[in-house]
Each structure stands twice: as structure tokens, then as C-alpha cells.
Image (cartoon, rainbow, N blue to C red; front, side, top):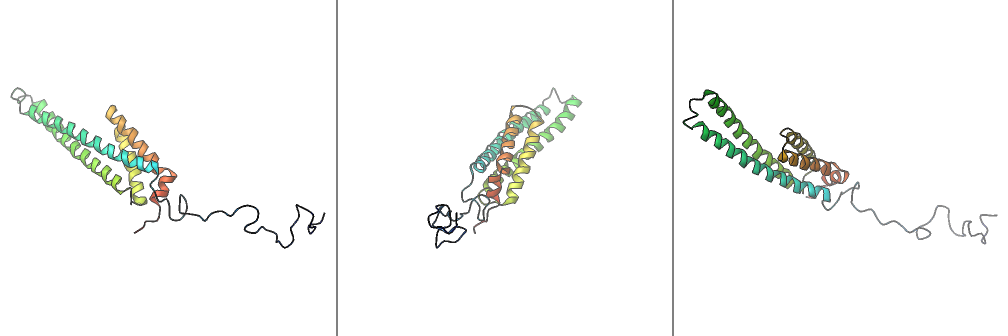
Length: 183
């Protein structure tokens, strides 16, 4: 069997070089477009990142609702502190002074934490890797803070925060936040 034999269907065809030429055999691959892992990055926000953005807005809403309830509790403690029957109870007055201030501090913290969630969600469209890392840290801290007062609201915060971390930390989230920014 000769490689130059024109009747051999498996041999090299005359006038053709070894290595394959465009247009013969397998079709040419289309040119590489910007996408996950390629220069340029994705052009549309991945579904997981969109979901994380929505979850951050939900966390912010829950923060506002929680801040309202804690503010009402702080107001109730302040009102009870001025109650004539409790004026002479020194232990209650000390507790009311401490817990009233602590409750107002929690209100301020809850509002600031909600503002941070809105800020992060708003930056998902144009933010870089710093926003991604901040969102992951935010999610981890929110999940930890949601575990301590293990009530339904805390459990909801924990689940939402874990989902934010997972969706943002996935490879498509990394590709989204590490893409080249168009100015």
C-alpha cells in the first residue's frame, strides 16, 4: 500500500499536504466571541447574579421592617420608663436606660446594613471585582448575624445571605464582575 497511490481512499490525496486544509474535512470553528472565560466577558448579567441583586433588595426590605419593629420596641421602653408606677423601680430604670439605647443602636445598624445592601445591589451592573468581594463578605456576615437570634426572621436572612454568596461566588458571577468595563 503506497501513500501516493491515487486509488487508495485512505492515503494522501494528490495535490494535498499533510495536516488538513481549511474547507476539507471538518468545518471551521466560528470566531471566538467574548464570553465566560474569554476576553471581554459576558455581555448580559448571568441569572445567578440577577437573583443575588434581587435578594439584596429583599434583605434591605427586611432590614427596614426589622428597624421599624425595633424602633417601636425602643419607643415602648421609653414610654414605660416614664410610667409613674415604674419610676421607683431602680432595676427597671437601669434596664430601660440600657435597653433603650441598645435598641436605638440596633435600629441605626439595621438601617445602615439595609443601605449597604441597596448600594451593593445597585452596583452589580457596573461594579468590578471589589463589589463582588464586598457582596460575598456582606453575605457571610449577614448569614452569621442571622444565626444568632435564631428566629424565623434570622433564618430567612441566613438563607438569603447564603444564596447571595453562592450566586456571586460562582464562576459565571466571577466572569461578570471581572469582565472588561466599557466606558
